[in-house]
Amino acid sequence: MTSRPNLSIPAAALLALAVACKEKDDKNAFAPPPPPEVVVASPVQREVTHYLAYTGVLEPSASVELRARVQGFLESLHFKIGQAVKKDDLLFVIDRREYQVALDRAEAAVRAQEANLLGASNDAKLARDLADQKAGPEIDAIIKAARKSAIEGDLAVSKAQRDKAKLDLGFCEIRAPMDGRITKNFVDPGNLVGRNEPTLLATMVCTTPIQVSVDVSEADVLAVQRRMAIGGKIEGRERGQTAPGQWIPVELALRDETEFKTIGRVDYVAPELDLATGTLEVRSRFENEDDFLTPGLFARMRFPMEKSLGLLVPEAALLSDMQGRYALIVNRENVVEQRRVEVGTLEGDLRVVTTGVAQGDRVIVVGVLKARPGAKVSPVDQAAAEAKKKESAKPPPAEPKKSAPGGGS
Image (tube, rainbow, N blue to C red):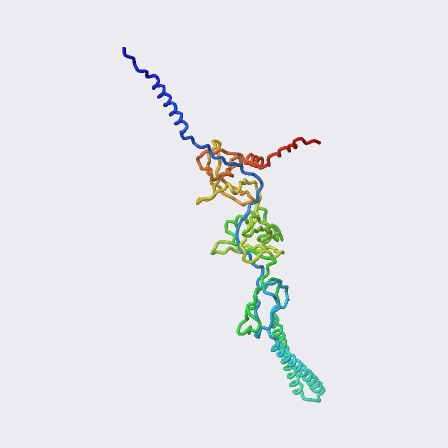
């Protein structure tokens, strides 16, 4: 009787091999990554001020060209280029000798005419007295009275020439017409100035106060006028004023400033719109007492209007693309949604959002680069995230010191 081979051992081995392969395949199977973690926060609601925002360039409140009004050689300078000067300070001197001689000649001519007038007056009086007493001819009195009148006219001409000579001599000294800062001199001493035309010597600008002019759009002009008209017409109120003598305030920030720290006021509103641009010129004044603001600097300006409740979100949470600004919102299913928003003014790190978000929305404020519209995320409340960050930043508790072996008190 032949024996049958034992197949149980190879079958068990095959079964064990199959189980091992299945476990290996389960370990290598693809497992999707967990949703990315993002930090969310709800918009903050508080009272905000609405502004009209514009940009402009700082300009001096006054600018004067200093020119030579008489011909002569420039004799001396009496200032340092770029320095601040006061009104009536001496700046330039033109050679005065020729004009001093002309003034002396004119004064001598006046004195001579005054002497001639005195003699002619006495002759005319004497001739009139004799004519009245029938002791002299009437024609003689008439001739001498006419001569007196002619000398009076010559005296008036001499006095006018003397006054002109005084003016010319005074024009040899060019003085500051106002308080301000002077530029460099355009002509050096020793050069002939004032020949054929008034030579430009330097320029002065007044920067205390300083001003900015902007062109306000027609839509904003109408909005402001309708707002002003709500309270009715107020007697004595000028355009650009909230009340008689109270001008609309203006806030200014320079290129490197994020906050509008400089406060000024409107001081001029053009009486009509520019038909070519459809804008209205509005000029603002800033006292600039520390003389920090410099003409030519770029300035951002805003005019505060009405106040109302508004929603604010962190500026970092608002993104931009070709279509404008948008925010990423996490809905109830923790899925990211893209919302188009319209924004207002910036207040610190928060930006006013006028449309696109509601008070209870969860806006992604940290991790916007990890979020994708339509994908799931793992949201963490901003307050909880900040608390966790502060807790992790605390130093670990100090370990108690171990006493030395065999030590005693």
